[in-house]
Amino acid sequence: MTAASAPGKVILFGEHAVVSGAPALGTAIDLRARVMVEDLPGKTEINIQGLGLRLSGFSIDSDGRVVSLGSSEEAAAAARYVSAVVRTLGVSDVRITVSSEIPVASGLGSSAAIVVATLAALSRHMGIDMDIRGIAAEAHRIEKMVQMGLGSPMDTALAAYGGYVQISDGVTPVELPPLDLVIGCTSVPHDTRAEVARVQELRSRYPEIVDPIFKAIGVISRKAVPCIKRMELEELGALMNINHGLLEAIGVGTRELSELVYAARGAGMALGAKLTGAGGGGCIIALPGEGACLRTITAISQARGRAFVVRTGCDGVTVE
Ligand code: PMV
Image 1: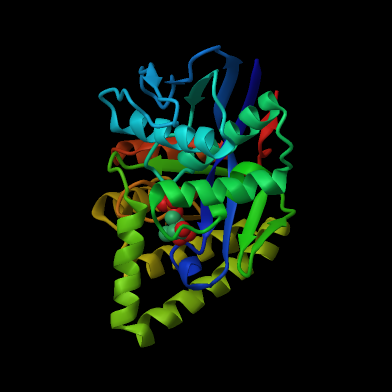
Image 2: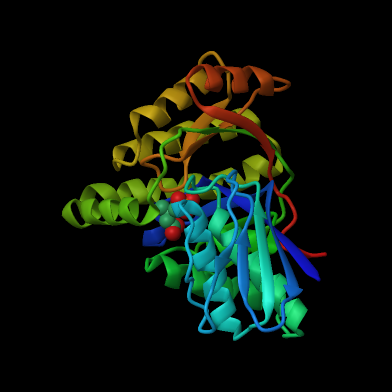
């Protein structure tokens, strides 16, 4: 038996702008997807156990196609990612069991963590030589293929390397101290592909407006790095608030997201709050003031968000 786990992530700064080449900064969080591989002679089976769902029993045929789907679209999607890894590595005669603490379709990197952990567990189990760079690159290719989209390497890089990662002309891990953030989830699932397409369409209609917004977002992503290094949290919060406003300007904010952002900043007394990921639904992140996590959580919960604390800068993929 071989097991591996990989972390979820939040984008701190730079979503959408990164698709057009501006820098973005993301970090691994302490929620993980776990994948267990064991021998199963004559059969290949994928079990999806977690995802906050109670579902199992997906089978895939000898070509690695998913042949029996349960009732949940989320579990089916997770099985598709695992199946794509199985096909890529040309593996059979195994049972793969996936469980994950990372909420799905929320911009918290659930699918990337599943792909990375599956690649790590399966390659180790089968004796296939793959280093962490290889896992990150292959996971990005597989995630893009399954999503049929543009997709920056942010999620898969963070699931593989952990810590903090800056994306600009490539993937650069950055050494920064951990932060406690409060995540607030709207119960609205988000569709990254649709949001990216909408923003890119807006950009092609108004390049003279959207390009300067992307440029400003890129400046924020760069300025955030020394702020985190020096733990200048008030300034970091101010940068989060500006970034949220710019994301609103390009149309990816929603009433639900803004309600959580304003609850966190208001009653929650957070130093800053913004949506994270593609928007249109999903989650916000808030930076609580010193010793004020509970206050921020309560404010977000009262605004009907699901709130919890995460630690940033966590470990990347590990094989157990
Ligand atoms: O929704 P998420 O967390 O997968 O983030 C998407 C981030 C975008 O910048 C909108 C797209 C991308 O591929 O970087």
